[in-house]
Image 1 (cartoon, rainbow, N blue to C red):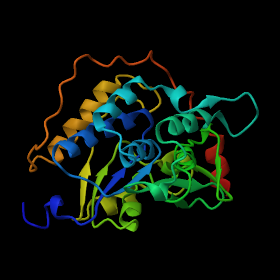
Image 2: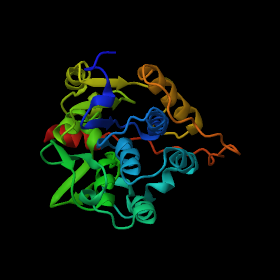
Image 3: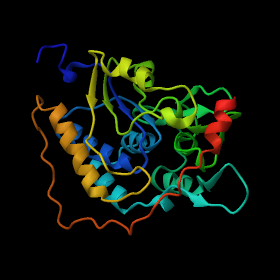
Image 4: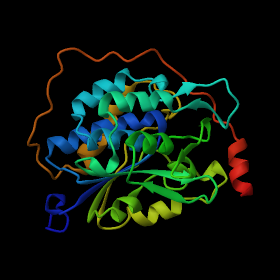
Length: 282
């Protein structure tokens, strides 16, 4: 590779982690491969599931420890069912508790890595880049899938899942100061949400010469059902190894003494369509 292609020469290597529900487990495999090849992002933007994995990296969780945490996680790690009426079945209370256990009352601006979670303003239908304030609030807003998680109030705005308008936050990563970006794309953009399509916009970013795209092959796997999380992590590893084959391994993958046992299968409630019509009317 020439000097321009070598990501190790980047002064501000960015990482854009896309949304995809349970498919976000594949991000873990990508983070492991980056670690093994000494590619160290200093700027991270995450949408939805990507905001969870990006935040974990930003606060310094080891990518192999993150694998164990991910395999043992279920929807109950992130959402709490509420019987009270509202625009969604789940609240983000469980997620806030999880973040607090791991990172305390962390503020994004105090993290050792430049980080932002992407959400969507329910009124303006514009992307909202959350790069300051409580980490738990930012992640809760970024994963607030319409009709499943309730909208989250942050800074006077009502926010929902960032995947509605920016499911792969390459643009945000550059906006945070990255000069090169590794982008991990898990799922198609949400063209069926009743909001303006984003697939063409994303395509314009992924074909740039300063973007390295990693796309795990995750066909027939559902973002709403966390089955075979170890398998999805491995598919993330394979995709990253293909995309980064020119970079030598400088840190070997540690051997695991015992396999990590996933929890019993959980299925996410079917995504209601009413919120899509609501957004479209606005």
